Each structure stands twice: as C-alpha cells, then as structure tokens.
Image 1 (cartoon, helix red, strand yellow):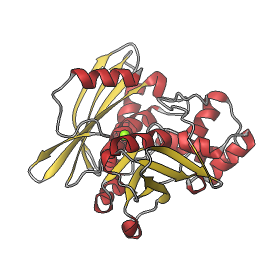
Image 2 (image 1 turned 30 degrees about the horizontal axis):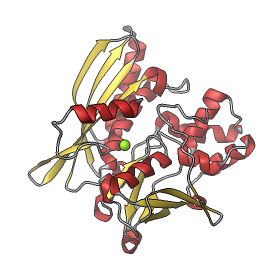
Image 3 (image 1 turned 30 degrees about the vertical axis):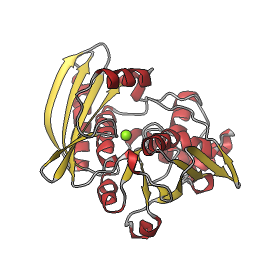
Amino acid sequence: MEDEIISLGMKTIKEKSEIFGDDAGAFRVSDAWMIFTNDMLVWSTDVVKEMSYEDVGFKVVTMNVSDISAMGGKPMFFAFSIGLPEYDKKVEKGIFEGIQAGLKEYGMKLISADTNFSKELVIDGIAIGTSKKLLLRKNARVGELVCVTGDLGRPLSALLISLKNFRVEEDDRERIFEKLIRAKARVEEGQKLTEFSECGIDISDGLVRELKALSQASKVGMVIKSENLPISEEVKNFCEINGLDQYLVAMNSGEEYELVFTVKKDRVDEINFDFTVIGEVIEEKGVFFERNGKIEKPRDLSWRHFETSIL
Ligand SMILES: [Mg+2]
C-alpha cells in the first residue's frame, strides 16, 4: 500500500530536486550539498507502551537525522509539525523535552515549528543537513565489501516481548529495549563515511529491505554471510529461549538506525570507527545469505511501522 502511494506520487509529481528518492533529497549550494528529509511519527503505529513522551520526541528527531547520516550529512536544523488530539500539558511538555534532548544530542537547532489539532497524535519532523559529498544508494560497486555499524536484532526482539509476550530473561530486558525506546542516529559515522565510501543507507525497515534497496538502485547483488551478522548476546539468548532464528530476527529488525555501507576492499582498514563486514557486492542481482556454506534467499518479514509478519 505504502509502496503504491509512493510510486503514484513519483509518477504524478514531476518537479523534483537533483537528488530525490534516496534516504533524503539534496541540492547543491556552491560547493556543498544541502540535504533535506522529512519523516512522520504516528502514535498508533510508532509508539510502544514502554516509551515515555520524552522518548517519543527524541525518536522524531532521531528518525529524521538518521536519513541525513545515511547520506553522509552533518545535521544542522530541525523543524516539526505536531497534530494533537487535545491540549495536555504533560504530553506536550514531555514531547518538547524529548525534541530538545535530540537537538542537543545531534548538535542541531530548531528552525520552524507548527501545531494543530488532529484525531490522533502525529509529529512530522524535517531535518536539514549539509555535506561536501553524498553517500548514495546507487553507488555500490561489484567487489566492494558490505558493512554495518552497531548490532542488529534488539528492536524486533523488544517488539516481540512488548506486543506478543515473548519471554526475556530479566537481566537482558533493559539492553534489548534500549534501542527501541531511544535509538540514536549514527551522525559521526555518517560524516566520516564520506571519506571512505560512496554508498550508504540507514536501517529503518530491516537489513533485508535496505539491502534490496541498495542492490536495486545500484543494479548489483549482495551476498551476506549470516554468521558475520553482529548480534548481541542478549538477542542470541532471547532467540534461543523463544525458539527463534537469530539471523531471521537480525535481518528483519527495523528502526535500528544503523548505517549499511559499501567500501572498497583496499580502504576498509582505514575506517576509524566500529563496524562489521557482513558481505560483498556481487554481479548477480538480488540479495543472498550464505549460511553454513549454503546460499539462500533471505526471508523478508516486511517490517514497517512496527508491523512485520513475524508478529
Ligand atoms: Mg532511510
């Protein structure tokens, strides 16, 4: 449905900026790129009961900033429109405090804001950033390594616990929920990446979907070694006690806000932040996972706004 609406919009609206349809849009101003993105948070589909109002405000900033980082940009300004079902000072103050915390975290300033009343609480954020160089989805080249920052699987594990009562050991609960409740965008890494990489995307809908987007845009394929996926001990433990496949969870966990990028083999050692090499760009189109020496097509559980077929 969402894909159909996007494709209708792409066909109908023809006046587009020079860079459009990547993680963010961009246009050139003298020797730099201005990067723009907007992303809307809808209460019923983007908020879990474990989140405070402050977490919600912080999340709106993070989900927008992450797309600036995916393009290699330095986040500069933030704007938002909020639709509220009623005036409730506790709710609004919490959300505004969260937005403030996000702006402080990422070194941004608020440039514009609007409030209105609506049936459901929605917050549409806009982030503006800048970069000398852009990371683009279409720039993956055969032979490059596929890499990812951070670890994968915690947000989906947390959702399964929150919405479906999956079991979790008490010692693991906080770490598992940490990212779903207060994920942080990879702003430093995104900016540094412009030195080493040409191609990047952030994980909002799960690794499988992001790899598909990179492969399609670049007209290449990717093969990922399942055993290389960075999965935390807490997620491994969670999957084991619930009889889940840890790789399936890691590959389909959304709202990770990690960066996936490609880099030439002879430059990988220069990268000066933590990341994991998970695979390689290949000629054969499609996304493949290698597990115990066998190549398989990954199962796409279609994460979107906390909805996935695993739930
Ligand atoms: Mg994105």
